[in-house]
Amino acid sequence: METFSQGFDRAPSGRVLFVTGATSGIGEATARMAVADGWSVVVTGRRADRVAALVESLGVAGLVFDVRDREATAAALATVPEAWVPDVLVNNAGLAVGLGPVDAGVYEDWDRMVDTNVKGLLNVSREWLPRMKAGARVINVGSVAGKQAYPGGAVYNASKFAVEGLTQAMRMDLLPRGIQVGQVSPGAVETEFSNVRFKGDDAAADAVYDGFEPLRAADVADAILYMASRPAHVCIHDVWIMPAAQASAYHLNRASK
Image (tube, rainbow, N blue to C red; front, top):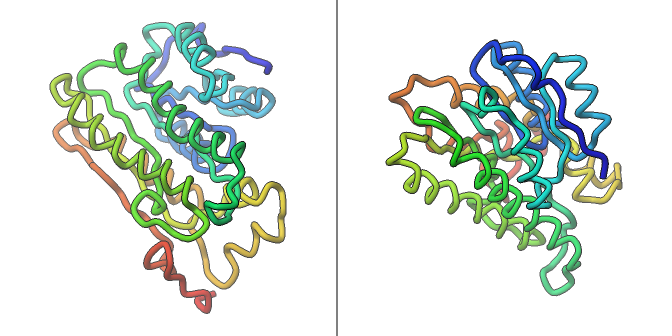
């Protein structure tokens, strides 16, 4: 896998926001919105071409590594100068793969979800947290799938329920250090998420959003930036954000569009 580190040769001009999985969807929208709001941003991802494009177009710093790879994560973050240690860490990297019953599950898909959604979050957090200071914030991107299970989503549900539990425990562990921990939990968001889940089947991915208007990546990014920019005495524990047409993981008004 190609790796690189870019943009750290200059001092940050504002508070630093570090976002994983920034090459598409919610992560990219968060990076773009943060830059527009005056943050100094570090974007990360596995796709070197997309990270490089964001570095060039947005003037951000960038790192290429796979959050699933503990050694690569540690090595990449160790290259970041002290001035770029995040004031806000957004653990966004995550995915769902497959939508079938647990008794027909694909081991490779299970590993990919657990390694990214749970271990990846832990890998990045463990490397950054010892360097983060009082007043810093961690925002984990969870999901409605971490609050309500649904058929066909067993392992994805398990991984996002883990994010829910980790967020709560991290908040307690880091309270004495003055580091806040929150979570944003979206419902249906139209990004590359469903295309990845259905392994490139565009028709199946598009059908997920038939008949209603889903959230956009920018809607979730707006919630993340709201959490990131609260006064120091305010900690938003969880923002559960849904399309107007969605009442739960199971209830969608597909006649609303």
